[in-house]
Image (cartoon, rainbow, N blue to C red):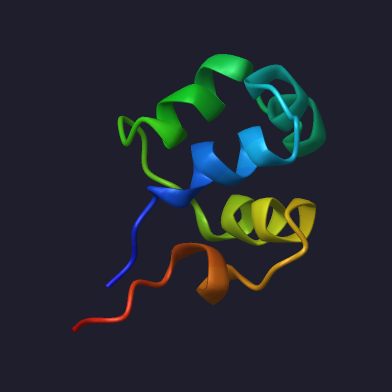
Length: 67
């Protein structure tokens, strides 16, 4: 199972704004905000870029282990 819940938490821990992320991903801040707020689908290529920015693998960022 995958989740977007870590995006905002990690972004804030790294001191990045929505605008910083959008700039790094070459998308609009509105688009990135919608991804974080689960209002827009996360595309694979963007997921890879986000994981690279956070210096983790996509699985470490998005994968939720079932209990």
